[in-house]
Length: 429
Image (cartoon, rainbow, N blue to C red; front, side):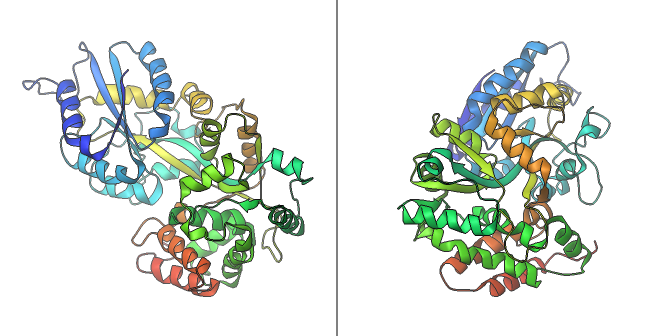
């Protein structure tokens, strides 16, 4: 297997060359590659950091499927959506693209760019409904992809810093504030947050406030039209962000996402509110770092009676409707739906597999997974409010930046969020 990391500049030359080399001969009338010939499947992804891991993973597949070679190509995350849209619209797209989930998958489905996989891939019925929902067409209900991973949002913490300062994982809101005050007094940034990149801020909001506004219960009420984002409980959840702002870097809106990662892994910051996808990054950046995770305790007047870990399906593998190697692509997708692949996702990618029956040898992963299974909620704006423009996450990210800059209060941010999603969201549908 050959694996490459490409940028936009390499797209036209590199992708066209690869696909022309693995396409069937011009005199073939079949849409799939001839089974007696070797086939090269191109797989595209935005996970540039996982290149080596996918080398290992697809080597296992190739050993079991002689005659099929997987060529994994990784693109910059910020460029990927446009690259994929261009590739799938033309003739030089991948055979098997890694695609987004929920609302961000729908444009590809509506454009007829992906092959339905219902009845063609075994094992999909074992995947949790909340996860497989991220791979379905909103209008036709068909399944278009195999889910890759489940992500969960929690608070990560540096165990050594906590020990050095005589701190323990907080179990009440008062203890949470006391921990942050103690860290700040010790000259340590209590929480690292890259607020310059607005996409991290809705995650921060749910890490801190999901239990305050009601988690899954609030989700159902909003979808049914029984309330909206101007609800006092949701506003109160955003007010928490202003309450804890003193425990962030003073110029937090000027701090980039990658800078916040370095703050945490270098020991400049003691905690990091983020997703389980950070575990692999932290391991790579600081192999000796001892860290764990916990659910932020219930704030005052929380709607729920226990802390929660918001979660969502992250990424899917689909088949390009224009692929000339569909038989081989279906062979790959069937393997991607097996516990064997799921275990490789856990072991090689340090991700929570969407496939049931997987175990986690990494103690940090197991701890985070136990937290999630004990009490979970949806990452609300990603799961339900990315099906139109503007995206709910995009609106709230900008509004939280404005809150940190003192340009709007929590009530104003919530009102602007509601106004944004009201442009396309109709309750009860």
